[in-house]
Image: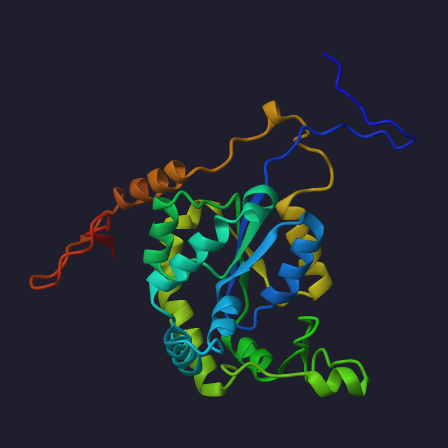
Length: 280
């Protein structure tokens, strides 16, 4: 059967329609996710779902929940898993996310959130992790400036804002971009990532966040979906990752422990569905 071609002097293979892209992008504070998220949204039209952005808006809504969120953010602590999971469920149930696809920004942050994703069958096709050393992250966060109108992110030293008094006059810093809060956020991020990686190791792809921004953006976009129609026809494409695949891979790794660590006597029982042993 002949492959259909698009017309025109630069004839290309006419691709079968792709399902909406479902993506996760992860990285510690200051790794540059915001900049790359905007590029991904512009390129692929997916809906950007940032639990952090939603929480920062809620902290000013005048409600009791908003006041509690504000306290969590000021101290650099994570909000309760239940609140983060509820936000994600609500956002991903929107018609826009169902039809356009989604880009989850820094979720899941804990092992419980990762397990909830599997239970809710919220599985990304691609999982992007941007890696940057802590000392670089600290410098980036302390020098970060944000334009609240455009969402553009600048840095006092590495990426200064334009010499425009209007733009410079409206720039703000994040309330949690203090040295104490950043240290706490980095500690929490690293402490929790091991548990998250246990669940998504098979679909995670790491990128060096210290390469030039334009180079990293190019690599991310190519990883998500190459411009060349390598899998133009649906029948030739590898199967999409499913919740069952992720859970099966996780349970298989757990079963391969050579030296399992049993819970100590007196430890509280794990919640239903949680693992009870681990590997040393």
